[in-house]
Image (tube, rainbow, N blue to C red; front, side, top):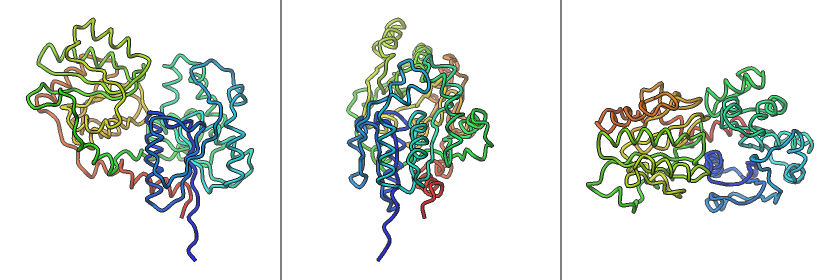
Length: 382
C-alpha cells in the first residue's frame, strides 16, 4: 500500500488581512496541490482569509489568548502570558508533524520554544517577512524595538531561518550573528493561477469606466510603514499637471489622518480610500499605474502582484525588496523614500507611456510552483 504523505504544520496568530497571512495561505494551497497533508495551526481561528482556507487543509484552533503587540511588555513576560505556547507544545506531541513552518516574528519564537519543550523531532522553519532592524527603529512600540534582541536569542535554535528577500537575509545575518548561509532566501509564492483568474473579474467602481481619467492605485494597510501621505502629496503634484485619480485599497489606524490630508489638499473628488477589498487583483489589472510608497518592507507582495497582471509600477527604493523585485529598476521606477516629487515625476512618466513590460521568465521566481518546491525541499519532505 502507498505510504501516507507526511503532515506539514503552518503556524500563525490568525488569518487577518496581512501580507504574511496571505502568503501562508498560498503556501498551504501549494502544499495541498503537491499532495501533502497540511494543518493550519492558528493561535485563534479568525481573520479575513479564514474562509479561503482550502477544504483539504485542517484548521487547528489553539483558542489561545492572543499577544497584542500594541501593548507595552517586558521580556519574557509576553511569552509567559499567552496560552498559545503550551497548546502548541501539546499539538506537537500529539500530532508530531514532520515539519512546522511559522511566519512573523512572535509566532516564530513560540514555534521554536514549543519544539524544544515538546522534545519532538519536528523540523522547525521560521520565516521573516520584514526587515527587523528597520522596523525596530521606525515603530514606536517596545515589542518592535525588542524584536532584534529576541531574534538573536531564539532564531539560532530553529532548524532553518528563511528570509523572503536578500535584504531581509542580510539584516538577519547581522542581527543573529549567524552566517548568511543560515538564512536561505525563498521569495514568496505570490503569483498563483487564482491571482490571474481573479484579475479578470469585473470591477464595478465608476472610475474604471471607459473614458474616465487614469487611476493611480496604492494597496496596503493604512499605517506608517506604507507612507501613504507621501503618495497623496505626490498625486497632488500629478493632479496639477493632468487629470488623474488616486485609489487606495486597505484599512488601518491612519485612515482619518489620510482623509484630513486629502481635504487639506483639495483632492476630495479625485482620491478614494475604499477600504479592504477581497479581490484587489481586479483593481490592479485596471489601474494605469501601481505605486508602492512604503518606508520599509521585507518583500512587498503587492508590487509583484501588480507586475503579474501587467500593470506598470513605481516604487520607493526602501529596505528591502523593491530593488530585487524590479531588477535594479529595469522593470519599474525606483524613487527615494519619502520623496513626493520623485513619485509624482515617476507617475507622470508612466502615464505618458514610458515604461517597460516585465519579462515573463523574470516573474517565474515569484510563482507558487517555484516557492512551494523550495519550501518542500527545505522542510525535508520527500
